[in-house]
Length: 162
Ligand SMILES: Nc1ccn([C@H]2C[C@H](O)[C@@H](COP(=O)(O)OP(=O)(O)OP(=O)(O)O)O2)c(=O)n1
Image (cartoon, rainbow, N blue to C red):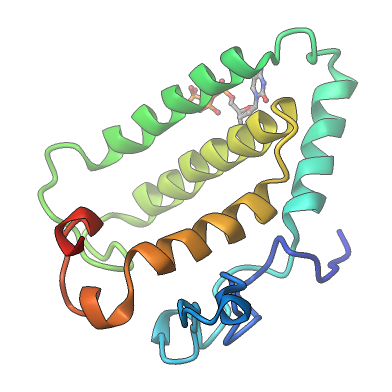
């Protein structure tokens, strides 16, 4: 699939102001430039909308829209979350990059997390939610709830700062 540059891929937009908060003057801007996790893209250059449309085609070709009510898709997604958790159960803590897992297990993680995302895109579609836009709004809200000066290096719930 060809790639476009819509709001589904925010990883390339360094220093993106996700909150619109500068306009409000409250300084709750999400800046990603100092975060080593987003310096180099990890994800392939494919938009949420492209993935969503490909999945819509998959469902349509099988005449499955009749089964994909919001509730059914939600339950399917929760089931896949359980399958992902199953890979990690009884293993103890695992490190970033999952070096403790075998290559087959890491591949399995990728499959299960894909199932979750596919159902999430499907769920958002069934609910008529513009998912990337909702995510950007939520990240802006998170930045306001967890201002850097109060939350830096702390894992407290935001209510602890109020
Ligand atoms: N009615 C369905 C059935 C499947 N899928 C798609 C979405 C998921 O990406 C994947 C889920 O397929 P399975 O239910 O076969 O689940 P798994 O792929 O996890 O297989 P298994 O349960 O054997 O691990 O297929 C779908 O959209 N709608």
